[in-house]
Amino acid sequence: MPLTNTLQNARKLEALGMPAEQARGVSEVVEEAVAAVQLDLKDFIRSELEKHTARIDAKIEAMRAEMHKAIQEQTQRYIFILIGLLSLAVTVIKLFPNLQ
Image (cartoon, rainbow, N blue to C red):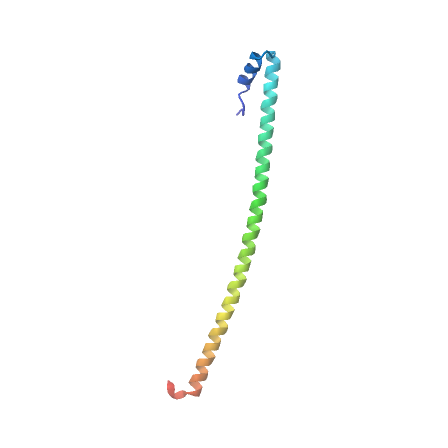
C-alpha cells in the first residue's frame, strides 16, 4: 500500500511545470524514500522497545530475587521463634509438671 499518493503528487508537479516523466520519477523516488524512512523508524522503535523491555525484565528479576531472599529470611526467623517457643513450653512443662 503506497504511503503517499504517487499519481496525485506527479500531477501536482506537472501542474507546476515539471515534465510528466520527471514528475512521475520524482513522485516514485519520494514514495520509496518515505517507505525506507518508515521501515527505519519501525526498526528503531522496535529496537528501543526491546532495550527498555530487557531493562524492565532485569529489574523485575532482581526484585523477585530480593523478595525471595527476604521471604526465606523471614521464614527462618519464624521457625527459630517457633522452636524457641516450643522449647520454652517443654521447659515449663518439665519444671512445673503439676500445671498440666
